[in-house]
Length: 334
Image (cartoon, rainbow, N blue to C red; front, side, top):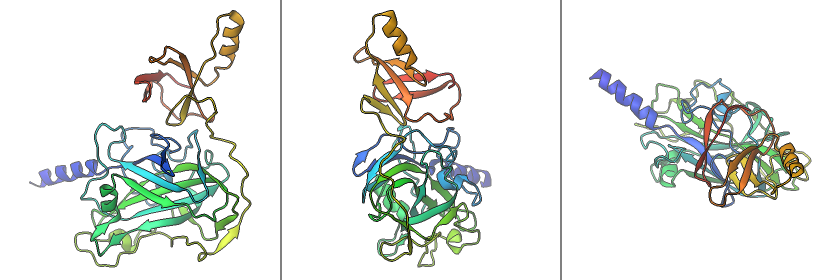
């Protein structure tokens, strides 16, 4: 009987996993994985982080590595984060309903949205939602009802520039164990001429300490009210601030004007037609960091390349689905 209980507990832990997989900017879906630092391996892609001292607590597994694309957000824009139990869309689902807890959203002003490792100082909280006593619901309950969507408004006074934006789910399935954290990071450029940043920032990891009563909360017999762990939420015209010059324009992670399709943090453009040896040579010289494929709908030659040429953290022989072309893309190392 005990073995069965352990097996069911393990199964429940697996089905409860989730991942921040899609970023929606003011009602425009940027596409699966676009501008988001994703885990590299399927073995832990949807698994929680449970070590309060791990750098994975900042942006998730492999989250210290930036991706090629940076999404533009206008001043006061709305960011919507979508969590999926099955990020490959093989099934529907958000999070197992037995797993309950709070949600938070953090931001970090960075010099480079692609190059900053995420873990470390500079984070401030702009949103939190814990337990609603009137509705008898946790934030995770609302998230499931809202099909995995969590939306926040970017404070209008924040300085223009590059940011990491970090939604976080925390589930409190067992009061006598460390809770499960599901963090993720989106890379954005905030297009604004404002010059304000919060003065009070925290380090992740380090923002939550072991022994915090909020981590040992028993959801089966709650002692309310519940305080969401971490720093206080930054409030406009209330929280202390500093001044910081805004950046006038985005110069990295931008889609080119001639893009015809995107796939996560890669984009595709159509090759110029060629029929002579010289034309062929010119096209060949332009193919550094590109991968060639054929659009089966039109027969046109296309090429796919990273938006920003950082070291690509991928394994050899890894396959990717080109969603818009309904075909597989394989490459054997970069």
